[in-house]
Image (tube, rainbow, N blue to C red; front, side, top):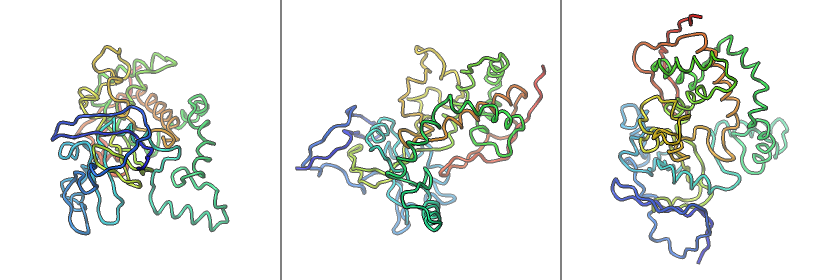
Length: 362
């Protein structure tokens, strides 16, 4: 008999109907027979070929080329999908908010998130060659374990406090006044959605011109754009223990990607997901559109827990400052075909950027 510490998670599927049996808290599970768990090979996913695996589907003209971050895989295979090809680690995609919550909350205090192997190799070897100590941090992205924990614990109190970040608001305002040489994907996406929804843009401009200290509608506009067009299609963790998810045995070391882009565009979490409705973030609780009716892990653009994006507060302040300056001074319009995005490890907006900026009459 073996005692295993893990999340009590059993999510079963029956055809296209997904039923849940979830214990809310983690607990010690005593098990002496795991023969009823399905193996890795039994996890649904695209067809695979010898040696190259599923690579064929992701090549140009393949069925999943620039499509894997959407709900296409969910529609075909359900809430858990395996992907992989030659040279890649074992990868599981989760299209279920509750399963994502259980796994993320069950990870230890030093969760593992992989990075680009070339970056990892360069940083560790370059710094060592320059005489750096073995326990000297190389960066939050490339470090893990005790070195990462010590570094993260040092910068967290500063980087994640809104009051601290606001000290740099004037410097960011100077950047916004001079515009920017490289507009981020979030800014581009938000401007596009506001241009396509002039009534929302007008409402936002009225709030900005009113010179309110708090700007709830501005924040709501940004949140809604990040729901529809997030920069990151999903959050990744390397499983630090074994899991039983939907009756499948997920081994320690498996790469698990929580597909929050697909989740945040599902009708069961956000009604009318294809529509740009900033009001859902500030409306009354009785409104069916109220965002808290969604599962809390259905919208998770900055990650969760100790590996949450360290630059979140700075990014939010940058976007708010830039958008407020643009919308206050310009009416933004869009002509031509819809804005396209190209999914990868990040979602990249693809030009041409058919914006028209007209001076606001004052």
